Structures are given as structure tokens and as C-alpha cells.
Image 1 (cartoon, rainbow, N blue to C red):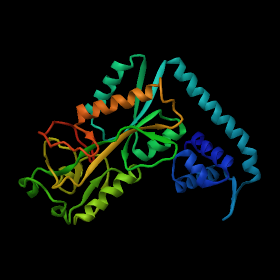
Image 2: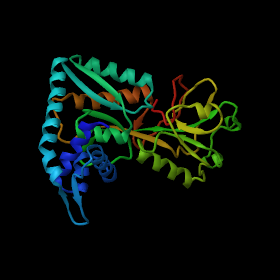
Image 3: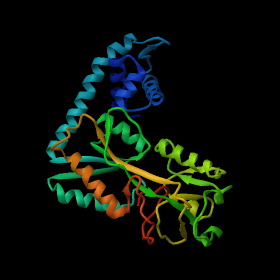
Image 4: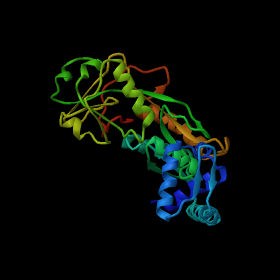
Length: 313
């Protein structure tokens, strides 16, 4: 258990005395917050809050812990700040684990060119965890997949990328020009983790059902082994890999929408975050073939990329 992170949750709940308000302040859902407070209580062996339908109150143990918890959190924040000062300016960025390596490399290079004095420190984090990390200050800016709503965050320009279907090279559907989602009926589907991408996960499955495709089973992961083995299909941008075939979906019903995200309290001017947001839009258009929302481009020739399910290539 990350004790410092859980103590940070505890201090916010103690200040709000309301789990809903604390969850909004932290930029996360209420159930996970309640679970983490319960985990902290189990770790410490005491009850920190008296909960009722009408109010939340600190227990005596909770009141005794609060001052110490605030001091620990403040000391850790200070240590991070001193470390950053010692190594120069650093911009901590969250990116999806399925972002293509070539796109990430182009993003880092483009930002370095416009901000040579700022080191970009990317971390692979799914959208839901990026929202929490942004609220806690663990990252400065993120590249998130929509739909996502989080109080206290601002979002950059939304870009869209058409998704086709990824199949094993020997699949009978590789012989057709366009695949209708209903053609996938009875097949199993590989997707990014629901816990990490809840908005996109729900949106994609709803669109599948609307077009007559109810997966026999939904697998969660970031590797294409099940697709290569012919045990499942996945959605992703056009790509070319040994043993893998890509086909467009009729009508482009599945799309991936991404944007940058940062804390609303972040300064709107003279800050590397705004530079990164601008660089991200330009790089994702040039390197990943994304376009402005509502203006999907025609599907071009396949590119050789290292792919993963739901991949942002």
C-alpha cells in the first residue's frame, strides 16, 4: 500500500467531512475513495471516521492522526520539490500505455525542440489513473482518452482517430473490404482495462451492441497475443504486423478521442503545460494521423507500427 497517498486521501476527507465532496476535490469517484480509506483503517488497525447516513465525523484516533498525516504529506511534497529543483525543470506527463512508441518518441522530440530547458518525464498511465494523478499533483499534464469528466481539470483540443478491427491473418474476414460490426457476432473482444479506461470501455461496448455485436467474452489487456492466436479481435488504428490483419469498419462506428488534460489551477500562460498541449495536437496529427473532432480523414495506407489493442498509433 502507498501509505503517503492514502494519508493524502485521509487528510482531504478529514477536511471535507464528506466523501462525495472529497472525491470531487481529488478528481476521483467516491467508491474508490471509500475503499482506500477503509484500506488505510485496516492497515493502521483503527477506525478513522464515524460514518452515518447524515454525517461523517473523525474518531478520536482520526483526530490524533490528522496533524501527523498533514506533516508527512507536506514533508513528502517538499522532498519532491527539492528533487525537482536539483535536476532542473521537469514536466511530468501521463500517456496511455497503448500509445505507439514512435508517436511517443515524436512527442518527446517535438517538445524538447520547443522547450530545451525542460525535461519531459512521461509515465504510462491509463486515463482513470491519470485523473487521480493530476488531482494529486503526481503528474503535471496528461494525454487522456474520452469520454472523461473530472471536476477541477481542463482539457485541450480533442482529436479523433478512426478504429478498424484487428484480426488474425488467417481470419475469413480478412478477405472483405469493410467489416460490419455485426459480422463480428459471437467473437471474443480484447480491450484496454475497464478500470483504466471506463469511459471508452463503456462507449465502445454500447456502440458494438447498437450495431449487433455482443462479444462472447471481453478480455482486458495491452498485448495482441489473443488476436494473433485467433482467439479474439480488437479495435485499433490501421497497422501492419506479421500475423495480423487490419480491416476498416463500415461507417467508422468506433473512434478514439484524445486530448491533453491538466489541473484548472495551472497557470494559463508562461507554463510548459500549455506548450505541451500545443505540441501534442501537432504531433498527434502528424505522427498518428489524428484529426479535429468531427472531421475524420480518409483511411490511408497501412503503416508499420508496433501495435496493442485500442492503440493510439
